[in-house]
Image 1 (cartoon, rainbow, N blue to C red):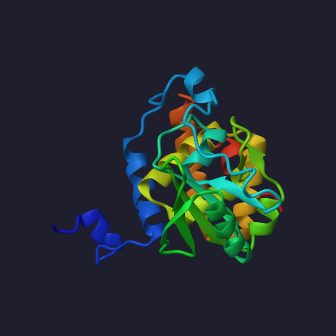
Image 2: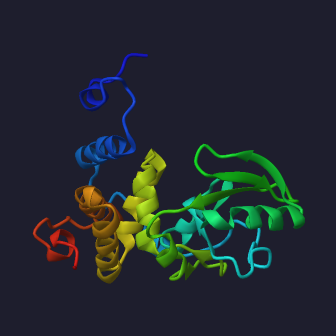
Length: 234
Protein backbone atom coordinates (compact mmCIF):
# COMPACT_ATOMS: atom_id res chain seq x y z
CA UNK A 1 0.00 0.00 0.00
CA UNK A 2 1.48 3.41 -0.93
CA UNK A 3 2.40 5.75 1.92
CA UNK A 4 -0.07 8.69 2.07
CA UNK A 5 1.60 11.98 1.26
CA UNK A 6 0.80 13.50 4.67
CA UNK A 7 2.55 10.56 6.37
CA UNK A 8 5.47 10.51 3.95
CA UNK A 9 6.11 14.21 4.56
CA UNK A 10 6.74 13.43 8.23
CA UNK A 11 8.10 9.88 8.04
CA UNK A 12 9.34 8.93 4.54
CA UNK A 13 9.72 5.28 5.55
CA UNK A 14 6.06 5.13 6.63
CA UNK A 15 6.97 4.38 10.24
CA UNK A 16 6.27 7.52 12.28
CA UNK A 17 7.45 7.67 15.87
CA UNK A 18 4.85 8.04 18.63
CA UNK A 19 5.44 11.81 18.69
CA UNK A 20 5.06 12.02 14.90
CA UNK A 21 1.86 9.95 15.00
CA UNK A 22 0.49 12.28 17.64
CA UNK A 23 1.22 15.40 15.59
CA UNK A 24 -0.30 13.90 12.44
CA UNK A 25 -3.50 13.06 14.34
CA UNK A 26 -3.64 16.48 15.99
CA UNK A 27 -3.36 18.21 12.61
CA UNK A 28 -6.15 16.02 11.19
CA UNK A 29 -8.37 16.86 14.17
CA UNK A 30 -7.67 20.58 13.85
CA UNK A 31 -8.82 20.51 10.25
CA UNK A 32 -11.95 18.45 10.80
CA UNK A 33 -13.29 19.17 14.30
CA UNK A 34 -16.34 21.41 14.74
CA UNK A 35 -17.58 23.07 17.94
CA UNK A 36 -20.22 21.12 19.79
CA UNK A 37 -19.71 17.80 18.00
CA UNK A 38 -19.18 15.89 21.24
CA UNK A 39 -21.71 13.92 23.29
CA UNK A 40 -24.32 15.42 25.59
CA UNK A 41 -22.93 17.17 28.66
CA UNK A 42 -24.78 14.87 31.09
CA UNK A 43 -23.20 11.79 29.50
CA UNK A 44 -19.73 13.33 29.46
CA UNK A 45 -19.87 14.19 33.17
CA UNK A 46 -21.07 10.75 34.24
CA UNK A 47 -18.50 8.43 35.84
CA UNK A 48 -19.37 4.74 35.89
CA UNK A 49 -17.84 1.31 36.56
CA UNK A 50 -20.33 -0.81 34.63
CA UNK A 51 -17.69 -3.10 33.10
CA UNK A 52 -16.48 -5.59 35.76
CA UNK A 53 -12.74 -6.15 36.13
CA UNK A 54 -10.77 -8.40 38.49
CA UNK A 55 -10.28 -6.80 41.90
CA UNK A 56 -6.55 -7.03 42.53
CA UNK A 57 -6.58 -5.09 45.79
CA UNK A 58 -6.53 -8.20 48.05
CA UNK A 59 -3.93 -9.90 45.84
CA UNK A 60 -1.49 -6.98 45.66
CA UNK A 61 -2.01 -5.68 49.17
CA UNK A 62 0.97 -3.57 50.39
CA UNK A 63 2.51 -3.46 46.89
CA UNK A 64 2.23 -0.04 45.19
CA UNK A 65 0.24 -0.43 41.98
CA UNK A 66 -2.29 1.41 39.85
CA UNK A 67 -4.75 0.78 37.07
CA UNK A 68 -3.63 2.47 33.85
CA UNK A 69 -4.68 2.34 30.20
CA UNK A 70 -8.28 2.41 29.04
CA UNK A 71 -9.79 1.23 32.33
CA UNK A 72 -8.12 4.09 34.22
CA UNK A 73 -9.69 6.68 31.94
CA UNK A 74 -13.14 6.02 33.42
CA UNK A 75 -12.05 8.10 36.40
CA UNK A 76 -11.77 11.13 34.09
CA UNK A 77 -14.19 10.56 31.20
CA UNK A 78 -17.08 8.29 30.21
CA UNK A 79 -16.24 4.62 30.52
CA UNK A 80 -15.30 2.84 27.30
CA UNK A 81 -14.84 -0.78 26.29
CA UNK A 82 -11.42 -2.43 26.18
CA UNK A 83 -10.08 -5.97 26.11
CA UNK A 84 -7.71 -6.08 29.08
CA UNK A 85 -7.07 -4.56 32.49
CA UNK A 86 -3.69 -2.79 32.47
CA UNK A 87 -1.83 -2.20 35.72
CA UNK A 88 1.45 -0.48 36.51
CA UNK A 89 3.89 -1.61 39.20
CA UNK A 90 7.51 -0.85 40.02
CA UNK A 91 9.93 -3.00 38.07
CA UNK A 92 11.54 -4.26 41.27
CA UNK A 93 8.16 -5.62 42.40
CA UNK A 94 7.59 -7.58 39.20
CA UNK A 95 8.57 -11.03 40.47
CA UNK A 96 6.50 -10.67 43.64
CA UNK A 97 3.50 -9.45 41.65
CA UNK A 98 3.76 -12.43 39.28
CA UNK A 99 4.09 -14.85 42.20
CA UNK A 100 1.02 -13.46 43.97
CA UNK A 101 -1.06 -13.49 40.81
CA UNK A 102 -0.18 -17.11 40.10
CA UNK A 103 -0.98 -18.07 43.69
CA UNK A 104 -4.38 -16.40 43.21
CA UNK A 105 -5.08 -18.58 40.17
CA UNK A 106 -3.91 -16.28 37.38
CA UNK A 107 -2.23 -18.01 34.45
CA UNK A 108 0.88 -16.58 32.81
CA UNK A 109 0.27 -15.81 29.12
CA UNK A 110 3.30 -14.07 27.65
CA UNK A 111 5.93 -11.38 28.20
CA UNK A 112 5.26 -7.93 26.74
CA UNK A 113 7.32 -6.12 24.12
CA UNK A 114 8.03 -3.60 26.89
CA UNK A 115 9.03 -4.70 30.42
CA UNK A 116 6.06 -6.61 31.76
CA UNK A 117 3.86 -9.62 31.18
CA UNK A 118 0.25 -10.63 30.66
CA UNK A 119 -1.81 -13.09 32.67
CA UNK A 120 -5.32 -14.45 32.54
CA UNK A 121 -7.66 -14.44 35.53
CA UNK A 122 -9.47 -17.57 36.69
CA UNK A 123 -12.55 -16.14 34.91
CA UNK A 124 -10.62 -15.69 31.66
CA UNK A 125 -10.06 -11.92 31.86
CA UNK A 126 -6.77 -10.60 30.49
CA UNK A 127 -4.55 -8.58 32.81
CA UNK A 128 -1.48 -6.72 31.52
CA UNK A 129 1.22 -5.98 34.10
CA UNK A 130 3.56 -3.13 33.10
CA UNK A 131 6.86 -2.96 34.97
CA UNK A 132 7.66 0.71 35.31
CA UNK A 133 10.87 2.55 36.07
CA UNK A 134 10.05 6.06 34.84
CA UNK A 135 11.48 8.91 36.92
CA UNK A 136 7.97 10.00 37.89
CA UNK A 137 6.77 6.54 38.95
CA UNK A 138 7.32 6.72 42.69
CA UNK A 139 5.59 10.08 43.10
CA UNK A 140 2.74 8.87 40.89
CA UNK A 141 2.20 5.72 42.97
CA UNK A 142 2.24 7.86 46.11
CA UNK A 143 -0.62 10.09 44.90
CA UNK A 144 -3.21 7.77 43.41
CA UNK A 145 -6.87 8.48 42.69
CA UNK A 146 -9.82 6.07 42.84
CA UNK A 147 -12.13 5.18 39.97
CA UNK A 148 -15.90 4.67 40.47
CA UNK A 149 -15.27 1.07 41.54
CA UNK A 150 -12.75 2.15 44.15
CA UNK A 151 -9.75 0.80 42.24
CA UNK A 152 -6.48 2.77 42.48
CA UNK A 153 -5.75 4.69 39.27
CA UNK A 154 -2.98 7.05 38.21
CA UNK A 155 -3.66 10.70 38.86
CA UNK A 156 -4.50 12.54 35.63
CA UNK A 157 -1.07 14.17 35.03
CA UNK A 158 0.73 10.82 35.07
CA UNK A 159 -1.90 9.05 32.98
CA UNK A 160 -1.47 11.86 30.45
CA UNK A 161 2.31 11.25 30.46
CA UNK A 162 1.77 7.56 29.67
CA UNK A 163 -0.67 8.24 26.87
CA UNK A 164 1.52 10.94 25.35
CA UNK A 165 4.37 8.44 25.29
CA UNK A 166 2.22 5.81 23.58
CA UNK A 167 0.30 8.11 21.20
CA UNK A 168 -1.75 5.51 19.37
CA UNK A 169 -4.88 6.88 17.76
CA UNK A 170 -6.98 5.60 20.67
CA UNK A 171 -4.63 7.34 23.12
CA UNK A 172 -5.05 10.66 21.32
CA UNK A 173 -8.83 10.27 21.57
CA UNK A 174 -8.57 9.52 25.28
CA UNK A 175 -6.26 12.47 25.84
CA UNK A 176 -8.49 14.92 24.03
CA UNK A 177 -11.57 13.79 25.94
CA UNK A 178 -9.94 13.66 29.39
CA UNK A 179 -8.25 17.04 28.94
CA UNK A 180 -11.37 18.59 27.48
CA UNK A 181 -13.32 17.61 30.58
CA UNK A 182 -10.63 18.50 33.13
CA UNK A 183 -10.89 21.54 35.40
CA UNK A 184 -8.52 24.48 35.03
CA UNK A 185 -6.86 23.39 38.29
CA UNK A 186 -6.28 19.87 36.99
CA UNK A 187 -4.97 21.22 33.68
CA UNK A 188 -2.42 23.32 35.55
CA UNK A 189 -1.26 20.20 37.38
CA UNK A 190 -1.00 18.33 34.07
CA UNK A 191 1.02 21.18 32.54
CA UNK A 192 3.41 21.22 35.51
CA UNK A 193 4.08 17.46 35.33
CA UNK A 194 4.50 17.42 31.56
CA UNK A 195 6.82 20.45 31.77
CA UNK A 196 8.95 18.57 34.29
CA UNK A 197 9.10 15.15 32.66
CA UNK A 198 8.27 15.63 28.96
CA UNK A 199 8.77 19.32 28.05
CA UNK A 200 9.05 18.43 24.36
CA UNK A 201 5.36 17.44 24.46
CA UNK A 202 4.02 20.74 25.84
CA UNK A 203 2.96 22.15 22.47
CA UNK A 204 1.01 19.00 21.64
CA UNK A 205 -0.53 19.05 25.11
CA UNK A 206 -1.92 22.54 24.55
CA UNK A 207 -3.34 21.49 21.18
CA UNK A 208 -5.06 18.50 22.77
CA UNK A 209 -6.53 20.70 25.52
CA UNK A 210 -7.84 23.13 22.89
CA UNK A 211 -9.33 20.36 20.77
CA UNK A 212 -10.90 18.65 23.77
CA UNK A 213 -12.55 21.80 25.05
CA UNK A 214 -13.81 22.68 21.60
CA UNK A 215 -15.44 19.29 21.14
CA UNK A 216 -16.53 18.33 24.64
CA UNK A 217 -17.93 21.63 25.85
CA UNK A 218 -19.43 22.70 22.56
CA UNK A 219 -17.81 26.12 22.87
CA UNK A 220 -15.58 28.08 20.54
CA UNK A 221 -12.05 27.55 21.80
CA UNK A 222 -10.67 30.96 22.63
CA UNK A 223 -6.99 30.92 21.79
CA UNK A 224 -6.54 34.10 23.81
CA UNK A 225 -8.00 32.46 26.90
CA UNK A 226 -5.36 32.40 29.61
CA UNK A 227 -6.59 29.00 30.82
CA UNK A 228 -5.52 27.31 27.60
CA UNK A 229 -2.43 29.23 26.61
CA UNK A 230 -0.43 30.10 29.68
CA UNK A 231 2.83 28.40 30.45
CA UNK A 232 3.01 25.66 33.11
CA UNK A 233 3.53 26.87 36.65
CA UNK A 234 7.11 26.55 37.86
